[in-house]
Length: 168
Image 1 (cartoon, rainbow, N blue to C red):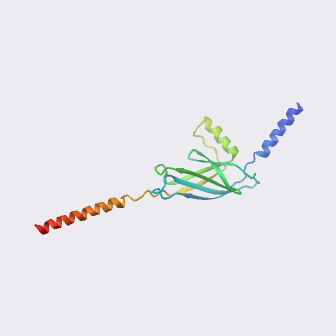
Image 2 (cartoon, rainbow, N blue to C red):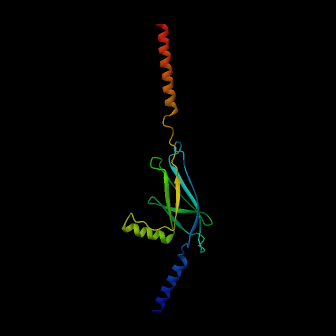
């Protein structure tokens, strides 16, 4: 009986020590997006942020992200610095605000548990970052080749018409 109690207490202590969560998170974020869709096949979205907590966090503190119900991993790029990136086809990319919801391990486990029962379930994130995408340029309404062809046809028609008037 004492052995079982000892191992149970040891397991609870280990879980408490290893499962730290960020207390009072503060974030500084910068975001980047591809703006020219004429030369790329995918629009890139990148948000990089620095996470500061009141309590010290482990060295490799894992974070997970969710954008439009799409699961992503946050890559650690420095001390307390993370990056979340994804791509989208230009035809599906929309202009506007994308909310990047960041979860720690406990929050991510809660998201997965909630999604098993209800795929549309929303779990409160550790923090949320707003990425603003102004839209991407897909090219001019009329290509320059079409415009040049149309102008040359008009010039040729006018020249032939004037020649016919002169000869008549």
